[in-house]
Length: 319
Image (tube, rainbow, N blue to C red; front, side):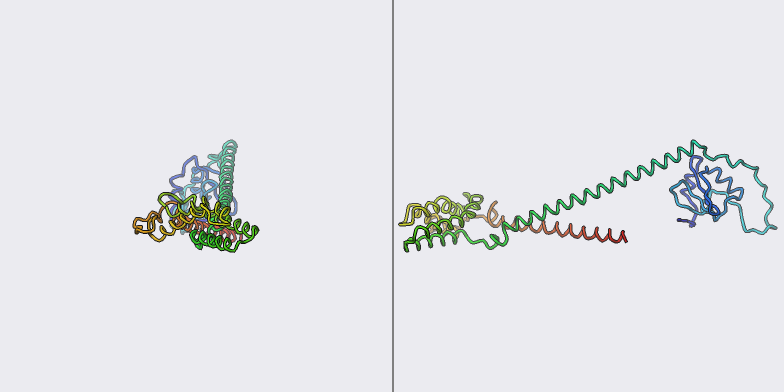
């Protein structure tokens, strides 16, 4: 039960009218609903003391009667000799100014509708909170899944420890010439060829996305690995073949471009055609992957922190 005895009730004074219902609590009993005019009459007759509690409507807090400045309370605790006998007001029918049966019924209907409306809004708020939780968990699963996919595709298998295509091509070519000189068996050659194709397959798939006239080194590597290497594995077992000669030319030019030379290997290749900021280059792929991982980690940390805070609040509320 809340009481406020600090100062007059300005809000009650402004809202005191014949259309407002009041309640009185006196000697453990509740009187009301009554109109404000009847409340004034009870105060004038001394039926309401300064310490009695009054309330406007069924939702306001109980307050002391003396806090309502417009309520004419009778003076108390004065010496009889100093106070003239007050003239009692004419008797008033207590049934006056009290709401009738219809008014009470309408009041109860209004209060019931207010409670029903509050329950509806609370149910909507609870449902929205549940939907937010479900959507948050779906988003968390999506972010975590995408982060795992990116890490699986780039770390630690191929990025940033990925071998250079030039080194892989050179290793395959050197092994091919060694097996050809040793006149290896057909089974050994076929196993070597299958392993070489599997090794260069992901390199060719990446080069097909990044090779262009603006990235000429990877263009040379793409032609060597996609157009020449498979043929070379098939027709260069006994002796050097035309496809092997083309492969060697493409690989040699890629090495020159990587060293900063031109396609002829003689002049300084001052204007680099391999821009690190070109779309699809290794540098830009590294930047995009790193940014994606950082954003995903930030989202995960934020969500877990918010979930932990919500769990603590819920546990404190239940206690």
